[in-house]
Amino acid sequence: MIINKIPGFFLAVLLMSVLLSGCKEEEIGEVDDISGLGGNEWVKGPLDKWILDSLVTPYNISAKYKWDQFEFGNITKNLVPPDEAQVVPLLSSIKRGWAAPYVEEAGKVFFNKYSPKFFILSGSNEYNTNGTITLGTAEGGRKVILYGVNLFKVKGMTGYDAARDSSFVKQWFFQTIHHEFGHILHQTVLYPVEYKSVSAGVYQGGNWINWDDAYARRNGFITAYSSSSFDEDFVEMIAIMLIEGKAGFDKIVNSIPEGTSEQGITRAQAQAALRQKEAIVVAYYKNTWKIDFYSLQAKVRKSMNSLF
Image (cartoon, rainbow, N blue to C red; front, top):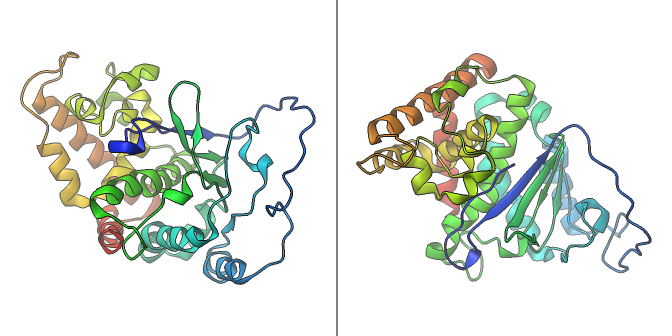
């Protein structure tokens, strides 16, 4: 699960649930399909050919943009299909900012083996009764649902505003993808157990929502959501380190203010915790996957710079 704070009018809290091997089946009663929105069958056109040529053929990854309410699990939520004009810009950007760097650094065999295979797209957000909005869900490391597709904008798209869109899109989409891929990797081969000792006793569990990212960093966590559990901490480190780049990550660590948090963590301790976690992530990628993390990080960051 990943939840992050988003600045400005994009709301304060995001929620992503990671569903592992199974799911609970519940009685949903009689529900009619919404006709005319695509479902499982539609006449294939240029957009479908782009997906075939750009994702299916090279990476064995498909994407579903036509409406099928049962792909989203909770059929009581009000969702809308994505604007089809948004689909290629979104997927081509994800390809550039996630797939291409991994393929270049680790090879297509590695990427095709471990990457999720099916993207489901929703044009709108999924709003929850507790005031959060669902950012995306990942099921078993194979299927990823992305919400809010109609809000996606990068450089070159009509209406793009760097001040408004760059941070939001990085967190909403790219942090999501890298976070989820991090889960797939550590669920395949677990990260070193010593990672769990770095911030032992400071994790907040469900109370993470009472923190913001700045306060989390004062306590040695890269985001507020990192403080919810060991696993989320590990993959949030991966995601933030990749999308922010080496200089951006260093800036975050160096910007932690002087003083001691309410949890009794000093600035030096918080910085040391983040550096320990960084070192473990880098070693994990090298020793487990034979990937030079800093080289991968530079490639991802270069793609971020080209998009925003």
